[in-house]
Image (tube, rainbow, N blue to C red; front, side):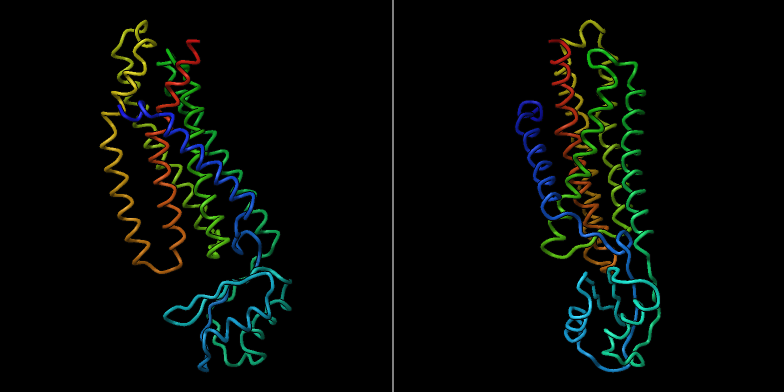
Length: 300
């Protein structure tokens, strides 16, 4: 199988992308939305004809912490990061938009999220992701306990964790760069996207690992170590086309969603496109080759 023949290249590419993502996260951080930092979401229409560029100029002057103004069919959606508390902040928002003439606004929605609630959500989201990855790794280690030769079952779980971290870190790294260059924010849907990516990636990895397990069980225990790389190669050959076809059809659907749906879920679709592409790569080109390295290490 060509994946094992050139595994150093594929593993090196995965490592390079992961390191680059960590660098991007270190340099640019994540541009967190108001769900995590606190702030306001305002949906409104104007009774007067005011150009969008004029609104942007007012907002740039009035809000130094940052804002996102998006035009919709009905009017505008404005997201503003927290710069104050309570009624004072809300009045300031309305006055900035209307140039101290709030009567020209028709407000259909005005929600405020406090910074304490935002920080709590951010903490819980991080903990949830870590616990999900650990739970998946432990389950894989348990599920593969019957094929602990030549590679210990806990190493299947460890490799799964490495693959999942690869997918999450790359998705976060790309969004940190896009947040710096294009102003993309991390909103509440982004966390949902990360959980979907974890589920999709682990499904792809389990398909490959399960085929390896089936093929190992067909071989006598004393021959498994000697023929392990051959067995892994055969298993990859048997699952490669299926995984590739599944990934391509999923990505085609996500691209259509990204192009044709409202801007409010573009970031969600984009995160899935990046994460599922990364997940397919890690399942085929990282997880299985790492098993062969663990086998060599265990024999040494």
